[in-house]
Length: 92
Image 1 (tube, rainbow, N blue to C red):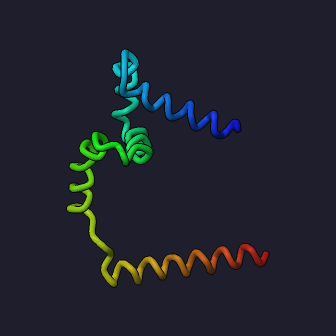
Image 2: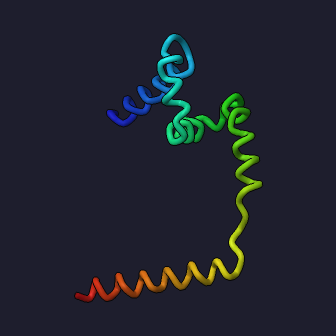
């Protein structure tokens, strides 16, 4: 029951961020990247939020690409090395 109450309060706090006189006070918090990402992730079904984050997602799709084979080989080698080190530490 406490979790449900906490989730309801959190949702009400999110609504208060965008409505009323609190909006001006909370604007720096919303502009903060991490807070904005968390807020938008919780409200993806809101068409206004989707409209606001659309340019960021478009830019992200332009600036990121899947890794090529050389990148994957380096990542696998690094992971194997870490697993070797952790295995030797676990044996001690």
